[in-house]
Length: 204
Image (tube, rainbow, N blue to C red; front, side, top):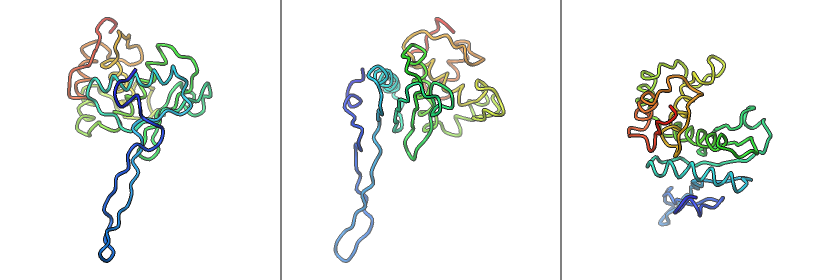
């Protein structure tokens, strides 16, 4: 589903950068620094690969650069996702997106896009944009699920708004408050500094 480089990314290291480390006598010594693959798929069934590539393509169309991401399919095992269908966490410089459902549906596609949005947000959102987003939305905690409900966390509001702005079909925003079309549009513009890629107004 994704044209260009995304269709041909291997699961091994894509690039190696040689960095000059020092000089011993007349000889130059170099240290090889391995760069993580831009995207990896681990045990992903074809339909889940398609969904991940679709999510990546939306970010590409919006000119929003994603960090290295590893998508991991766990079937119906809930533990890697903290009893949720999906979860993003970091391993070094790589954003790992755990998928804990074997059912492919519109909801699963939306979940994969939501978790991919978390990767973009955590990698790209500046303190200034986060502060502006907080002023706009009024959340107290960026990520503290013990203190507030899921939908009151700033990071979840941000991911849901990114989904709305990017997704290529109308989407009813039922998981966060302040979900009018104008409120979602304003949030997306603060997060990204640009207009929504799609931002369908049919269902908000």
